[in-house]
Length: 342
Ligand code: NAD
Ligand code: TYD
Image (cartoon, rainbow, N blue to C red):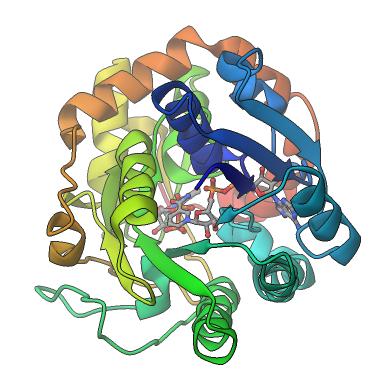
């Protein structure tokens, strides 16, 4: 393993992985291939932009030319695929874009990786492929796929393609399934960065339905270190859950954000629920722990640090919110907030 292609490396989790790996592994080269969609941001990679073992290439995983040329030019031997259309609301508003990247794009990337004769291919997936699970239960890797949203279906489809390439073409693959991830540099559409930045400005926080939906919350640096652990030590053909082992209801996360910012609970608006909204995700990750991985962050400490990061880095998110973000906000929330009940 010498030249690692990190696709989607300018996004939230991919950039955390690159920032971590470039500094920890000066002996390895990290080449980011990213289309720079609305969610990709080169500012996320500024901390490593001058490092000798980092390169950036703008390109599309769904383009054979882009994949083949980056693999040839940089003599790629390993692929870690973070590239995805990942934001649920856009998935519902613009479904074709995420099928194109999350499933068709993975097909192209696998095929070109195989042609280039690479060693290992790591596919970054999600706990959403398990679908909604009952209270008190936890998903394990052997559980069936039961995706409920077009996004999770597109990610499950990608996983099946990865499996097929392992069996049919003898490609060395591993898959990770991470839970809801939070931390610095997250596009302010996801619950935590959206609510933190809206609350800083004293704006209404649109909580879907009763807010009692439950998620497992994982700090982005722990997600990145788990992906690295699976890349280096994972068994070929295996799937690994990555959990933060902190389950919380959206309402509790929202209240904690408000407490940390010293803002009133009156900012919360219960808006009509999202279509096909899963109530609960939770996982066990014993298989990953058996590889030696441990979480470094507790939820409490990491949530406080994350709130502080958005308070101290307005330069990063205000420029995003001043752009196309505003149109998306209007389309997504204007009618919902008008129909809010509190
Ligand atoms: P993100 O939206 O922040 O980043 C995705 C990146 O992929 C962006 O930089 C974007 O420009 C790039 N991209 C999109 N389409 C592309 C294409 N066709 N070719 C090349 N690059 C493209 O997403 P994220 O939150 O960092 O998620 C990264 C991965 O982790 C995704 O595969 C996602 O499914 C998975 N995941 C995310 C979470 C979470 O809570 N955010 C949880 C579990 C798994
Ligand atoms: P999100 O961070 O978008 O991740 P995902 O949909 O992939 O789980 O949402 C986390 C939870 O927060 C989810 O149950 C939806 C809820 N949520 C709201 O209630 N209101 C919002 O405005 C957002 C963005 C999310």
